[in-house]
Image (cartoon, rainbow, N blue to C red; front, side, top):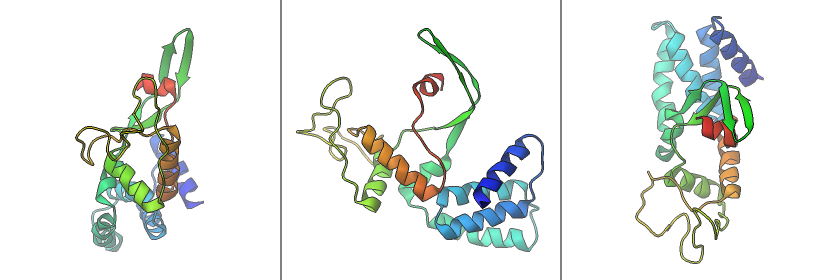
Length: 191
């Protein structure tokens, strides 16, 4: 209920309303205590953006924030670097015109390192990737760990399929308490 209320407050803030800074700090602490790291990061950022830079609550936020940040797996830092906001608009794909609501999209592809954190945390067994067509992986010889070319944990994960992507997103949603999803074709083309 707190998260839903805070999301409503954020919408009101976009329309010029003021949100008491203490509410952002309360959300940050609740999310941090529940292990919802992405939600906590967002709330801390909102708190520091609007808070008076002095006082007991601000001092407490300055104390707990570095502790909180140290609990984030390094491979998932880019999740916190964030998403980019895409404004609403219209796109034509073929004969169809789509009106898109505003949405957010990750600035970068999911990395091999981020996918590794997911696989390690859940013992997930990735499914064989596509074996024919564009972008296919020869599953007899390669997989996401060894794609057949040099790759570091900073490179985009390859040789995964839609089921793997959806499993990663489900885990990320549970872990962050946010609502990540794959973009639609129209959103991808528009972005």
